[in-house]
Length: 273
Image (cartoon, rainbow, N blue to C red; front, side):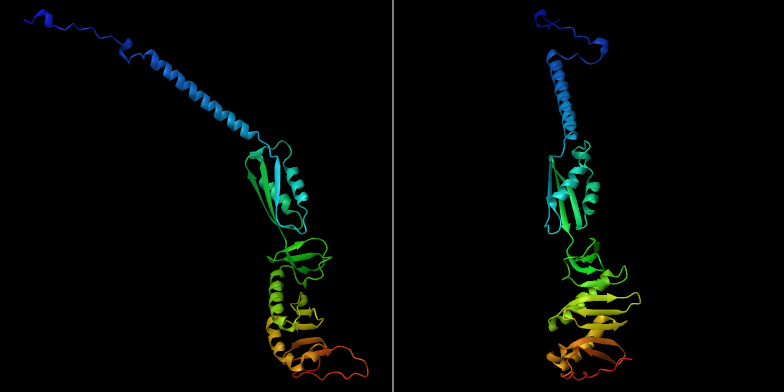
């Protein structure tokens, strides 16, 4: 039998209520409450921040671009007009603003972007006209046709006339012809394509050329190989050239005084039909 002094005194185990988990001590309970409180503050802050962002207004409008024909203040006024009615930063109608800006006649392209925290940036690209089209339109350097209403003040640009939908074709022919006439020191002033697909042009030197239905670039190649035979002096006296003949061409000379002898017909010329 063991000595009574060697026996351990056993404490009865504390029973848990209902036989489940132990009740947390006071410290653990305080930590849990503080964590819940902190989490509530975080969510409250996030909610307040989202609400604050949603109520922000645009205060600055910046218009960028190289302007020659457009007043940037007109663009800014259009943008600010679309920002009215209580629209907030995230409710800005970007597509609607872009459409309104591109409706300005000289605007070729526009991009509209938000810039945090309260700015809108609009970048505008102007049409750069390279030719006139008809009475009131232009063709730009992208070969797009645009309408202004008047070509007054742009008489230095070549004038193109042709059926609708043929703008790119005429521009391409114009460029190719200008390359070939560069050696003459002149350029195309007018290029015309009729509804019957007949071509004609007038140079800056005032020489007129009729091509008929022949492709101008192909037809001019043979002509330029023959004209130098006339010499520069006689070439300067040409008034018009008719290339509508299958085996030659006809020329008309500028008028002379009665005592001045007209130059002879160039090689290969045939009388008009």
